[in-house]
Image (cartoon, rainbow, N blue to C red):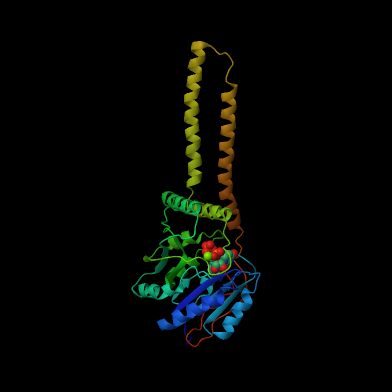
Length: 325
Ligand code: UDP
Ligand code: MG
């Protein structure tokens, strides 16, 4: 019988050469102290720097290290998914490579998992070093998500979390191309509990996020979990129709009482332009959904694996080998 590690720690990494050794050292220190069998599954998401070489060196030095090399850069969501697909543990922990999430929280997560929680997610107490703008937009987004969709996405929660095997298996059933991970995590359900922590600034390297990407992430979140914007278009149309009907009555009565002096070019222009804009916007909303339908119908695999090297520790030999999604 092949042994399976109890804990798999999945790390999506894109151009993280400076931080990986430090991450490995801290994770190893924490995990060896817990006495659990473990593997550290590093997913190289098509890095353009020495990340892969760095991972290989770590794997050569420590048999707990496993490695999945994707064929190119697929983005964090898909890299994380690839990690979940290749993780063998009874519980899987997802952690960023940049050490913004302290590995020292892991023993607490394991303790709560042993108590019976399927998901233990790390919730940020404070958002340090972030601008007022970023905080406000983040708050707005969470409120909007709560208002319009049925899944409850926990606030200030990233991907740093522990998941039980059944949660991982549930997540693995969700093969959509447009992966809003926070939403997918929440969609799965099962008993879950937060642990609160202070998020550190990045250890090394730079973040790959900017406002345009965040805006697109927000769009992804909303369009993958609710058709509310489409409904909104319906009601917007209805509201315009009602207002137009009232205005029509006003014009008819005015014309009957005072005749028609052929005025109203400005109001006509305003109405035409405004309605034109509203129509284009609604078409855009429909387009957002249509584009997603198009992408999903192609049915492409989520990612391709260039190489998978499982961990080789006596106490951590993965039994499942998957080619790709
Ligand atoms: N990441 C990835 N693929 C990408 C972009 C990022 O695997 O295309 C990884 C990155 O290496 C890091 C994690 O995803 O481990 C989070 O990235 P980042 O720190 O840039 O995001 P933030 O912490 O600002 O959410
Ligand atoms: Mg980060």
